[in-house]
Each structure stands twice: as C-alpha cells, then as structure tokens.
Length: 104
Image 1 (cartoon, rainbow, N blue to C red):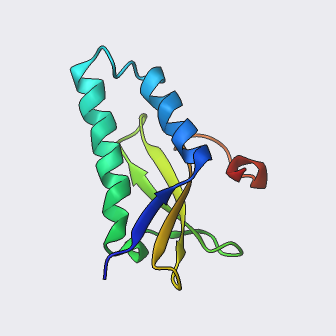
Image 2 (image 1 turned 90 degrees about the vertical axis):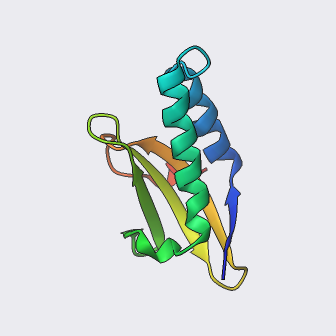
C-alpha cells in the first residue's frame, strides 16, 4: 500500500532555500538535480522502511540524495496508523548532528 507523503512547512522552507542556493532557476543541471531530489522524496510513498533509522528515540529515518560533496539528507518519520510519511527537514549531509530545534 502507498503512503501519503506530507512535507512540513520546515521542509518546504528547506526546499525553497536549496532551490535558491543551487540557482536552479538559471541552471538546467541544477534544476534537474532539484527535480530528482523531489522525486526521491515522493518515492517514499513506496517502501519508506528501505531508509535507515536516524534517531531511535523518535523513530526518525533518513533518505540520502546526491553524491559527496553534494549529498543531502531528508529526515522523515513514518506514521503507520495514518499511512503517512512526514518529511521534517532537508539538510546538507555534511552538517553536524541533528538537534530537536532543527525539526521545528
């Protein structure tokens, strides 16, 4: 069964910031990469458990997209009862540990 993928306001801001940072409006290659990221996020509707658990206490998972040094991490949680994926945050893979404030 397919899950519904919901992108939180925080994750939407992250996507908007990333779109601007990579200059996707003026670069075909950057736009293609950005669209690939969004497709990867939407692909979570099928088998979200394929992604490893990031923080056991919150049951957060992460999806990695891209290659070093431009890998990004999509932090999400699976809400089984609602059959929903909640995308919480999108961040560069080289950033430090995830803090609770990163999810607000």
